[in-house]
Image (tube, rainbow, N blue to C red):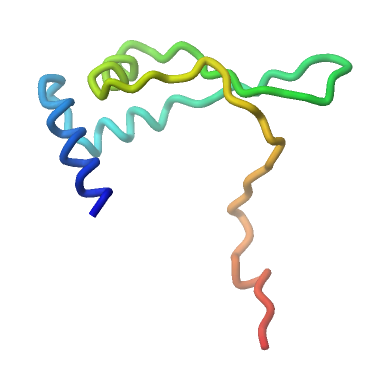
Amino acid sequence: MLAYRIIQELAIRWQHLDITVEEGIKELCTLCVEEVSFNGVDKALNQIPHPRESVEKLIDAAQVKMPEVLPSKGIIVTTKKKLTSRRIIK
């Protein structure tokens, strides 16, 4: 139900851009973070680069304020392994 409401809201906010919600989300998927690390320090952070014009229009129309920096937890996500190989069979 929540996903349906989000789709409805984005459709209303993006209607003047002449783009479907699916197309808009695919466009937003192109915005990635850059990991910034410092010499001699174990900490790192994720910086969100300035989006290109088409992505920026979608973000502005959705009235979302993007942070400039996000904390980095150093977690590596992998999806190449099948979940069944990590499950314990009883």
